Image (cartoon, rainbow, N blue to C red; front, side, top):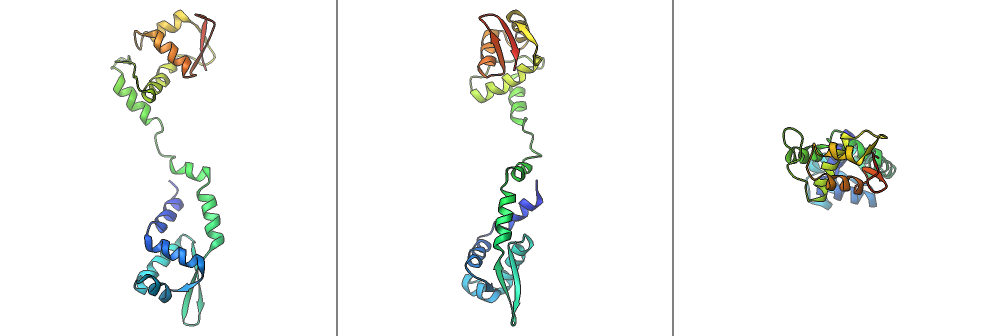
Length: 184
């Protein structure tokens, strides 16, 4: 998962830091001013500002005896554009096993020999089982209905239901009544 994405959300995952960002969106403030506005100790506000600075949301500039903090609007816009891009959000799920649900359903619904205990009635589970069963067919190869039934009988005796569901789910297509079948 993108460390930058996690750091950004952690920085904003505090009510006081969100309030600070909101105040700084209006105008620049010193630590002391923010502390008074939020009824917090200056050291606490400094800690929050440091976290927001680490992720590039706020900048400070010296002004007399104080440091004045302001929201870096351009950085905020750029970060949100990058962080919320489809590519960046997709990297957050890169380590997730997207087949975990299918594996669980297959484990729950099959015997040791790979045959089905039952054909699930629930659509999501049935779809997982169909994705499992369709792997027995080669892409682009045509099969007679008799051969399809032979292959499907290894999974369950109700080959007609499996055949119909494979076609209905768009995993296989058929030509004519009782004609040829092929994996899509």
